[in-house]
Image (tube, rainbow, N blue to C red; front, side, top):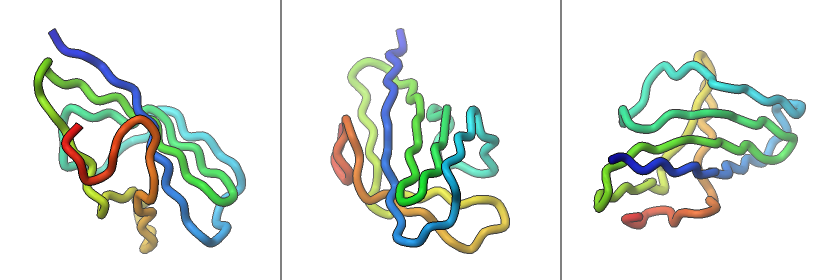
Amino acid sequence: MKQTMILALMLLFSSVLYSQTILNNPRIGMSTTSNLKIEKIELRDTTTVVWFRLNTSPGSWFSIPQQSYIQAVGAKEKLYVITSEGIKINDSN
C-alpha cells in the first residue's frame, strides 16, 4: 500500500518576474524521481509555491536537497528552494 503525501515547497526569489499565475498539472521536462508529481505551481510577485504529490511505500524515506530548484524551459534563471512547509530541507523525512 502506498501512502500519498501532499506537500508545499515555497521557493522565494528576489526579483519580480511574473504577475500571479497558477499552472495546474504543469508538464515536466526532466526530473530526478519518478514517484513525485508536481500538481500546481503558483507564480506570485515575490514567491513561487510548488504543490506536489509524493507516492512512497510505508517505511521509506525521502529527502529534498538544499540545491533543489525549478526552471522554466528555455530560461536561464533557476528558482531554488529556500524554505518549506511540512518537511525539512536536507533531512530524511
